[in-house]
Length: 501
Image (cartoon, rainbow, N blue to C red):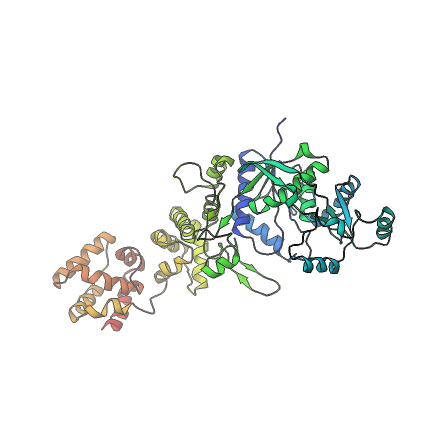
């Protein structure tokens, strides 16, 4: 019988959610939904030293904004609860003890000071096959000594005993057959001195307990794969092991290395899904959401980082991604992040978005810039007129604020060098005309008056635009005039003339 698809996104609550993490969540989600499976959010908070208050709620908020609602999670619950590893603490020691009893793990009583001495003596020191017999552990101590240390509650960890001269192989859905030489793998800690498991033990125990069918994670976890595979085997669960899917890295724009938060800070673009404020330092790291990205565009651009459907199509809805997603179209190679391309995706989504749907975000952006909008219907009309010119929501401030407030400054340099009394007379006459009809009729009226004043319309269009909006931008100038209305157009012409003359 084929396994029911159950996948998990398992972040650690240590800070902001990197776009690589969101892509991992997305590929999990798409695969689950395509196969009528279950998408689980599991919080891996075993490292209490790195736990950051508010990070779990932030992760849930990011997933909600992206439209990826989990089927099971810490807040929703589910048949395999609890979904926080810290709440499962009591369940892990039994597995560590089982591994010790079977000879696949051992107690290590080395103090941090003793380990530091070893590291200083050998900078590349690894606790493993070549060094374990020099250390203070249950392999080198007598059974009586070990029992006495345990009875005295001596601080200790449990380490996996990696075998010598073996090859650990597995099949990865993206990379095919992958093999590791165990001589290059060290004896990782499975259970820490505080009784909390490390990632290695917890991830295997929880994936088995939650009946996970496929593990999607970044390729940076590949070096840990042999440890996990050995644990599945040593715990007697080899037949229940999930399929492996190690995703390609998201690379810096130049392709040299994994994209980090520092790269975003250095190059001026976000790498987090939403704004994240560090509770310790108060430092704000900007996110895609607050910089004006639509969630549909953010999901779309992430899907295309390392995957395509084999066609030239680039714009996908979530429904289309669910339908077309396939593991065999995920690339082995890393995907370069291109912020200009990211903005292009957002631009395409803004263009096809319904103006009324964009209105709340645009209204909020305008309000932040000190521009209050009273008439929502008028705002939707304005959005429809200017949205083709906007890459992110904040662009609407520049592209539409002049519809609601008169320009305070003008691009005088674009107008003044060719300004003359003849043009002043034209605009004074134009301001006095009635404004009847649509944009086409207004333009005809404008050109007819220009002919009367023996001026070329082309010489007058740019000054007229600057009068209405303050600069050389915006949609059709007569479309702008229609929306502003006769009184406002007249006032703006008179106000601008004072700056031009």
